Image (tube, helix red, strand yellow):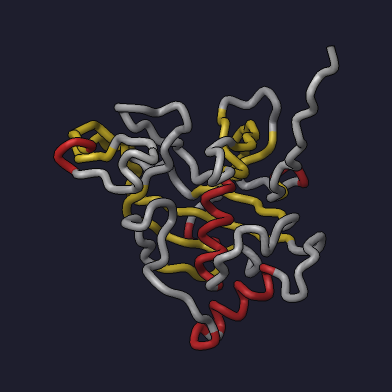
Length: 218
């Protein structure tokens, strides 16, 4: 299983899209988050650089959920404020859910990518010779404060893997792609299978095709 990556993150949160004042979290790292993590690992800033890559995501163990009280900003960009939002007016305390002791496994399939250097190749370079990678900031799983402890190849002694498997009737709904301009996303439903891997574990990262609205003729 040397082609499986294993990473540990002591604390993170994967906010649900419908969460407002009470920031609920997904129980599992979404494909959109894992894809962004891999881009950060290899120092890639272009979100579209490795579209059509396939990712398989699993967890080892069940991370416990905690609830904290923290100050959060609540605003939408407007021409009135032009990006200036004083904390005294736009921040207030709210509850947020956190996951702790997160252990994630990742498989990468780059066979359908059109990039010259595939994502799986760049990840291998980053792990083998990190001095060749140019990147900035800490390596996080989710928000910038959710720094990971490390990433390496998976070992059997790390524990049994629960893989996310695509299931239209599954109870686990996770975002695969989030449009940063519209905040709208593409979602997929999943179930969990233990220590089994099949083709339905793969999720292709693909941005939705934007269509122009047509005016109806009267």
